[in-house]
Image (tube, rainbow, N blue to C red):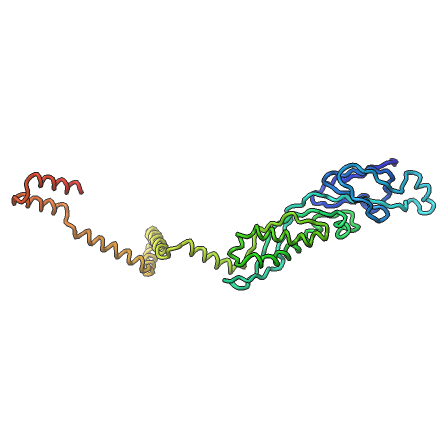
Length: 328
């Protein structure tokens, strides 16, 4: 066994927050052990059950009572093979853990001025990191030899959902405003949740609200209102829809579907709105007005009669005749 030792941690698991050395708990770390801490870590040195120091990135020399060879010779008669001078090191990740999904396990009761009381469900993601390693170890980790982000994610979800239920009522007056205020709600929930999580040595870096959904029945009503607003002039919309339906019925009236097409056309004709009937009536009136106008042949015959009777000269006759012919 070497007289000196090097203690370090290279965490290979992206979700791992802490790692204890030695793994099984406190051990016999030798006097003068070299502790290597990377910039993305903290290292907490425990000796005789107490946290002696929190080390940041760099190389550090540990001071224990386990002097190589000498300590074993002195203590083996009273304590056996194990040294009574126990020590261990906990490495804590300083990085940000993103994409922690959260959601409301119980719906949030919301009072809307148009739809009254309703139940909302919300979903999103958040990002957290350890802000105080000693507080985090003492309050959440304890004697565990390793700690994963999944061990804390449920607690974080509950905190965020609780803050959301308290925040949404003060920031939103109607569910119609919800999509426009996702960013404001996210920032408010992040600020509110920090007050609770900082007591555990954690910090909420970001909260993202992806969706806040009303019940399906309310969503259907909102969709209908939106469709009505897009349609605008209902009479013109009905004319357009009826014209399309008549065209489809006419196209489907060939072959074996003659009866179906004719029946559909008759049914649509009976359901034709008054606005369309008025439009067709105006078209008939315009056609009748156009049919009362004299034809080209009648106008040429009238010009010829006037010329033969000597009422107009030849130059006028030729000029008017040309105008009539050009108008065809």
